[in-house]
Length: 481
Image (tube, rainbow, N blue to C red; front, side, top):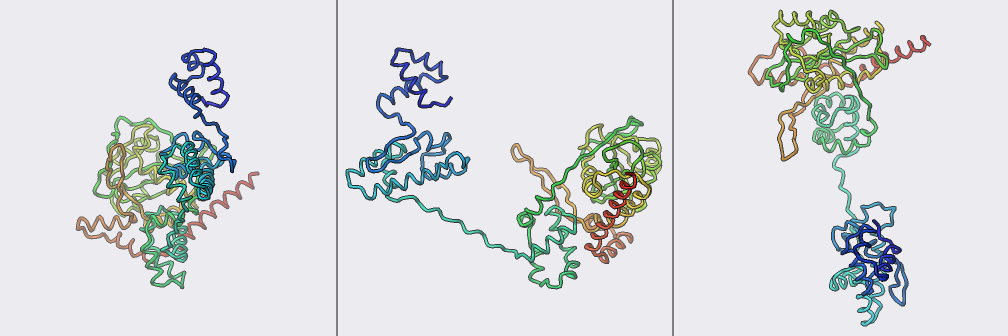
């Protein structure tokens, strides 16, 4: 409890009336030693109240030890208390500023006082602050130390450099800084054609900037890009006993092992037939293929998977899905069995088992299409054109992705170490180079196609396609009304 002046006087009065210390302590929730200490201070005349006259010449209000020094003071050093007080709620009384003003007035009085007056003033100052006498003399002679202002660090990268990086960042759909550093060398030749004023020195600055520096310089823009996210899944039950559950970590050294999932575009109303996005991602490469389908029947889902397999630049070796009935069925099970494709499933209601595809559901579908309801054939055709052309090219050719290399336990914490961010196409080329395998012709064709594509124009095409889909959506709403 807070010991106010009134409570302390009541305690002393009850002691004078003969009341025992034990009863006083139990009444106010104090220990008996605390009550004895206050009685002893009162008898010696050392009990200090909030307002006290300091000197005959000057009268001023001081904060007593209980107010001037904080409840949790780190030390009895005046400077440390002042710095600590400035970090507390400033509305409650400016503890540090008040301590400065008191010390300043004491220094002025000490400087213009005679020898015997200085001794009395020093006694009073030590009594209030509880400082050692020699340290108090040092303070009163030295005065209030001036705070040295820290000079701001000079900017290493000019505004033009940040402008170029900002242009690339926005055109690439706001990637993470580690991925942005990796995609800058791929995008830089194309932005040089747009910005004719770029010099070799400026180009070198753009290439040498670090991910940390990008985070600091783009901090304000990133605060405006917070978005809401949510999802929906519905499990199925068929053929679960025939399809094995995969719960161990993916440790693959060759492409072709994938995770698959459906993302619904039902909006707030899940009734009727609407469009789903079938998403497939490769574990080793991070390669993603997406296909929109109407509904989620077994035949439609299998047809979309077959179309995606034909477009993959590598052989499909395995599929891992959730427990939805669109995947756990005889059609897909027999198809995988006949084509020597490993078919596994995750545990029910355990999204972490399919962590790779759940991440891609956000970056490649939700972040692009949002949470609107799409249920018309016109929207299906427009979304298919977006997925199979411009968006697929952007994500697999120009957008770097990172992979978790290892986890290191440091005490109670786990530190995650990631590989260098590169694009899925470059990771596929590195796979062939690592194993001394000749690069297939279809992969070489993809590399030559990438060299001829301007990523900035590709970004504008994606924006136009999205605007067209949204405009058709809004026109349908107005006609329905």
